[in-house]
Length: 459
Image (cartoon, rainbow, N blue to C red; front, side, top):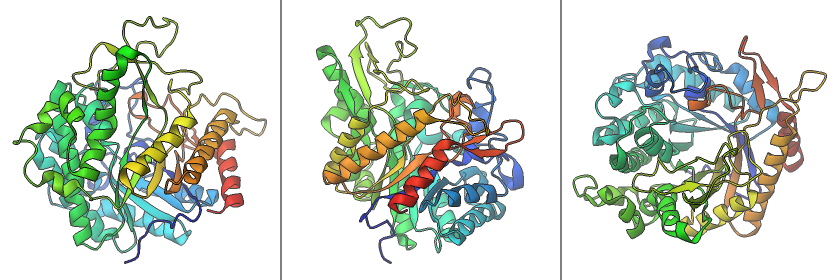
């Protein structure tokens, strides 16, 4: 089969969503709870005490979402498959009704001339597997490969672009170190075990998918430039870079964890964890690399006095086991997430990542949360700040391409306002607003802006 990626002669446009953030229906048609269904039930874990039981109610009818994607005129739509909807108990028994939904979605996209890109894991691990150890144990990686093949068996004749994992950094370190994300565990340096098992799961799944005929398998990483803001922070900055970027790229490119990574995560040298052949399976396992970018990480020593009025002043490194005495120091301007807006860092990241990997790159997520407080007389959200963010980051991609980076596509995060993980419904990234009372979708001005960009530049 030919390479299913866009050829890169021009930038391809798209948008993206994730299953738990939009679908709802947590027990519909045989689905069983994920770790997020359980986590959101714990008081105090979600900022607005909400959950994803309704979300955008995209299940069981994907039609309204498909209409919105098609209305943008984009060429790609990245969605994720809910593991507990397809293999509810995490074993081998496949739920046909769950796969029926994704078949409706894929067929609807293809009918509208939109290429589907399927992400197999966007954080919604079946709770049954978490009860057996989750990503801290090797079995989960093996079960992930089984599940991936089950999805491909149904959809592989129509879906040719596959991402195994989305942002495994979040799964490992926010899920098992800081506890800010599901499953909400705080096991310290043992979180590095989840890192290795996630990489192993990717490698096993990629091998199984290729055996089944797939030729467009990638992985999605939330890579970030890591910048030392003080001389004292240089060593900590190397450690953050190791755990944010190199712990993933080293195995994918070289089949190894580098010395700096092993310094901050010595458990990754444990032969009982990293078994012979594991990293050989990961090396060269990606046909393309997905890059999610929102902001750089600036590291300073904790003795530098923060501004107490700054809501980001207490940002620390609790998701990086073993790194203490330092904190993050984002500059202004910032989005509603308190994330620094820095498109120049985006250009450098894309160029450096392409130089490091040699892989075709897809910007699988890029976008911004803003308050969306300005409304036009006709009721349209006038999100000029989001448009400015997107325009600047599109220009950053163009600059990276001009500098030689093989960036094939830009997928804006996200199609519509949704359940934004530990923030609940308080943070809005969408091109489309969703009324929480009746779930009515309404395109924002940024939606129309993107549609015009696509019309002008080609999809």
